[in-house]
Image (cartoon, rainbow, N blue to C red; front, side):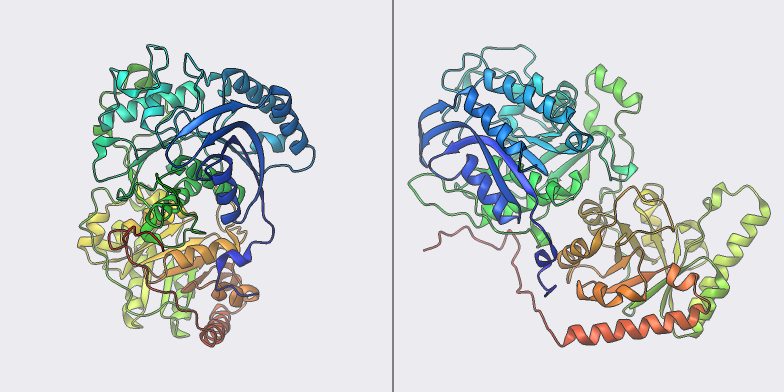
Amino acid sequence: MSVSQPHSLEIKSPIVWTIAGSDSGGGAGIQADLATINDLQCFGCSTITTVTAQNSVAVTLVEAVSEPILLAQLNTLASDLAPAAIKIGLIANQQQLMLIAHWLKKFRSQSEHNQLIPIILDPVMVASSGDSLNLHAKKQLDFSPFKGLISLITPNAKELLTLTDTNCLPFQHQSTTKTKSLNSKDRFYRAASQLVKQLHCHVLAKGGDAVWQQTQANDLFICRKVHGVSDAHQYQAYWLNSERVNTSHNHGTGCTLSTAIACFLAHNYVLHDAVVMAKAYVLKGLVCSQSFGKGAGPVAKTAWPDEIHYYPEITAVRGAEINHVDKTLQESAAGGEFNYGLINTAQGYLDCRYPALHKGIGVYPVVDDVTMLQSLLEANCTTVQLRIKNKAFNQVSNDAQQTKLVKDISRAIALGKQYNAQVFINDHWQLAIQLGAFGVHLGQEDLELADLNAISAAGLALGLSSHSVFEMLLAQQLNPSYIALGHIFPTTTKVMPSKPQGLAKLARYSALLNNVCPTVAIGGIDASVISDIKATGVDSVAVVRAITEAENPAKAYSLLEQQWHLAVAQQSQQPHVKPHKPSVKQQQCEPVS
């Protein structure tokens, strides 16, 4: 089996359901959902709520299916084809919405497994052509029955306004009758925050139709508690910033985005990952879209998003952006429901520069003992990390402990200079600066406390940990000297909130950072998996227990290094050259003949 294509490592296609309306024009609805599901290596099942007569320029008729057939579809699927994720799109009327909500509540109560299945709601109200999909509705649908049942809702700006309109105005198909608008970042944020509270779910508020964003298409992601995500990224709000693609061929963007999120969740990516991956998928789809009729063409289906320039820049919502949040939300923040502190994005560090590695890493030992570190340098190790896991230097109260910490780090730095090696100091960035280290390694949580400007000014190299696509993007925005990807396999060296990433994900991460930033795989790695690790395309490999628990650490390192070089040689005999991909700015949306 070749690993040059990361998707080939997936063993079984997960099942994704779509509960939505049929688009006879093929660009949105069930048709777009199933195309996206297939494109992202999932198996699609559908429950049709509505049959529409539409093409690329108009919707001429909308007809809801009966409640018995809607219910029969759901029950029949559940009895045989259990979903890994569910996407909900167009719902024709309030009766259908109540039926689906009641069914989901019963479905979730049947087992603990069902309670964990992610459900993504795209609150479709108007087709891309501008025609309403609720022709007989006198008032907008009430989505409150979904409160606590759905995982994420993905409204665009107009839908967000309608969903959070506190005046409960009768629904008007012409948005021009609205006297209100979400015409600023502050109003957009406040409405999205209100929706989090209304439905007790995560919110991805899309900015593609927000004209105030001008040349940008920035989405707002507000999350609550997310399983498998670092504490630093819980209860947070992020802007996901992308360039606006200059194309009119945007039919089915909302359907494609929400379905892609469901697919990535079905592939066991955490919610933060699924959101940024889906945004990259849609952006590339817009760049490559084309017309098949007289009106707007559909978003192209372009396979797994493996080019990092399509991914959004992530910026955290800062205190200055939420000064006008209403009292209820302020109280929630004060009570710990939302964390508005300094977040580890590139904000404030855009001018920071960290030196490139002087030499390739290869096998990268991580040790907690300076004597062992010296033995590894004597065995010709060129890059090593000293990881002494105790309190930060300024928190160590015992004078003897503080003295020993300074002595160990100072000796490790001196040994690095003596052997012309790249010695990284884990966590203790103040001492690393003070004592003139080559580099410092920081985890995602440590980033919040570190002064990256000071590290950059001191000329230290910077290594960063990541445990997901989202964290990898945050790290990459800081332009570090390398990014560690992990944990790949189960490890006992530290308690991790995330699950082991595995080889398939490692291959995808490596592809994303190829020729962008040096990569290091870490977590549960020993001699038995060295060849498999290198086959994913990662640049280097960090090892902990395979060396620290060895009878002879220096000899264990030498053997691992030999294995690594052999794996590198074997991979070089099977070259795989990725074609150059131009940036979004460089690409043109030209029709394909």
